Length: 119
Length: 231
Image (cartoon, rainbow over all chains, first blue to last red):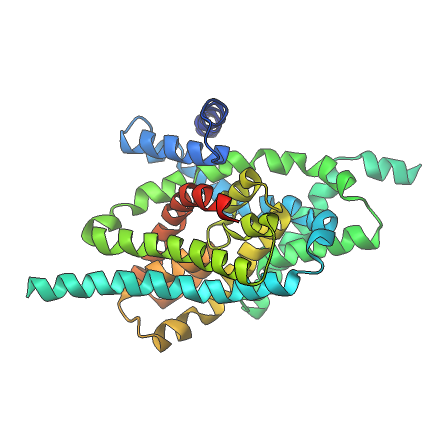
């Protein structure tokens, strides 16, 4: 019964997210509304973490499996990128380091600035 | 006859998916190599089996709809770790938020620049835009903006693996030594797969990296929708 309730709460937020996605004319995926709604519900203590803990943990752990079917669609869409995959690979590789450097430097700079001013 | 039955049954696709992923998990455990990512192995093995048995993708997805139904509820559950980790934000609010926003903007800008330099089209551009964020949010962004979703997933997985392999050496090389900064850098650049490395490096690094996953995902959803029109 406990797990049924947990699943019910999570599915209800999934549904609420879909409703918002349908109503709002923003180019955001449906699940992002669900994340924000559930976060707000947790923040405002409408839902407590323990009310969804087990089922949410299980779903998060099992999530990689859920990416396999859509990724296997590569079988059908491979033709679209057959000629440009080296470019994709290059962009993927370089931008990963650019993002890592920018996020790291910005964070470290602000921390050092604040520490300096504290002393 | 038997061929028709195999095409009709809904369980075979699920069994194939779960077995491929299980083999991926086992290989990861045995080799401990970042390249042996269970998701990557799962995708490759599933495609391989479908290709060898000459099974069309539509027959496979006919059965795996069941798995797809769970994806949205599972993604929503990311609100739970976000809620649990957001307290870490209090201590270094400005540094962390600025770090994550820098990560998102540098990702969008560098992808935009390289797509223009390499002369790729709009579809390739929006396929690549969510590459640094967690798959659950990234594939939604790609779909919403008209990208090639399977390619987005592959690009996201490779981004995570690259981050996982090189993060430690790269951060040392460019002089990022603060644990908070290291965590934010790894989580912003290489989401969940990078975060497993951040957790190995240290507790603060792991917590900060986890915090960056969903936060940078949500910020990317907003920023990517603005950037999408630029190519």
